[in-house]
Length: 257
Image (cartoon, rainbow, N blue to C red; front, side):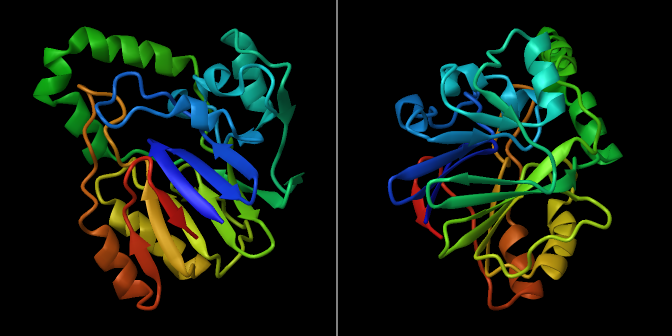
């Protein structure tokens, strides 16, 4: 199995001739590498962890109204309200299983990361926010169109029979949920709180993955946002799980799972 990160929370997984795409977003304002739409559209199916703006708004550009998109009931409601193409969307909920080629995708309940005061205040009182006040207001208005509750999030276990990837769309585990341990790779969204290295520790202790990578740490909404500092990520993994591999991905680069 191979993995490629397109930026923000967009992940492409490949096994043999089958590809799955997760949380696609076009990054219209980002300064990083552009999302390779032609490649992304080769995906056999698309899966959405939660229908926030930067995980779901651009779904039509990727599905073209014909590729199956697996999304929650809340996502379907948001799609209809925002005029997205729903004919290709298929409702999924926690504790379900979807088979696509060699892939088996299991769904789990999860939580959205709760923004802490330090993160909110840093954005609110940043000179960049006030220099670009109109952009900030426009972003806030659009974000409201994709509002969800913290509990309206899914996590995915993706296996091709040889390797297993455990993918979270936001850094929250649902209380009482039983997630698979020992996955070959944990994909952890490194965004939402001032010290994401501390938020990672419970995931490492509970899930015991063999390797860990991060996503969602890039500058998704410039000039309002900024890239998250990931320097504490690798030391945190090495301290809690000395045998686990930890890497910060580069955009549009394939990695073997």
